[in-house]
Image (cartoon, rainbow, N blue to C red; front, side):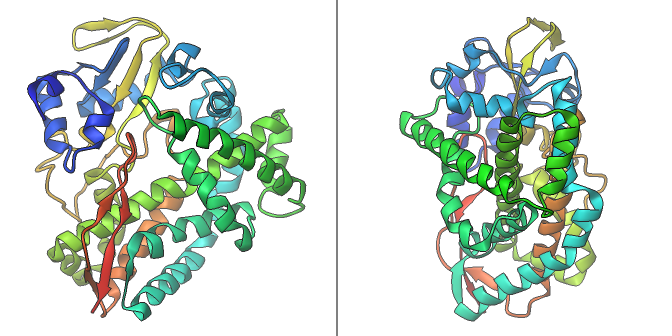
Length: 394
């Protein structure tokens, strides 16, 4: 990355790099705060990012001016604003409790056996074919099936949902969105809202009944419930897809890691944490300054945008020993990939279960996989993962 790029954080430029971590290291070396555009700042160091994720002076409810960075406020803006991700107190805790009814620990715990079965089936299908794509054959379908079953989405509808969920996913993240991406995301919101309304009407005593009951008790509107169910579906698989793909890519690139995991299958759970640290599925998260906050000797005024660089914090040499090396037994491992504080990822436990099941079973198989062609990264300003991971089974 050139010197001008190091002086300023640019999400699109960093995302376009095959290896953005030297750039993140340069950001950390430069200081605690970097300019990131008009009225926007980026925070690269672990100590600051960890503290600011929990700082009530930073919020999630962005003003219209922020949305105008990528287009005039519209139905997409309304959707983002309605989700639990972009709400502050007092509405955020109310929404979070209602949506958490779907992800109660007892519910998630019951899914462990089902997830193991799904992983075994998907890996078996890939192995039987001999060659395949780990994204298309494992990393994508596993969390989609799990999310669909959590929400009571019929198996026959999953292929219909996919293009709309993908289009909506491209609208997440910082930076200016191409007009075509924004138009596709708007169309996706309209379609998904219609689908979820019908789904809720047919909920009966199915998986969504608990969310509906909790939402009624909390006084949520029908529109809020619809938009947050859409968000739960999307959030329930996209980050996990990236976690699984990034972890499998690391095992493909470093066969010694796979041998370590085979020698000690109990490392599967800590491997999840290390893969999350090493390649944060979401590279950065945005906050809006609600009250003046001092960072690195500079006071940021209200309504300034702050980008917390999770991926940079996770590789901060001040917090992690040898941060550019994957250590499957790293402990403690206080990475920030699932955020922290009141906005800690609702689906973190479920994602961890899915990731651990994949890595344990991949290590246990005798017919291990090897690369069968060049991988292809996802093109997204905030999400880091793979669009394609071709493999061959031995």
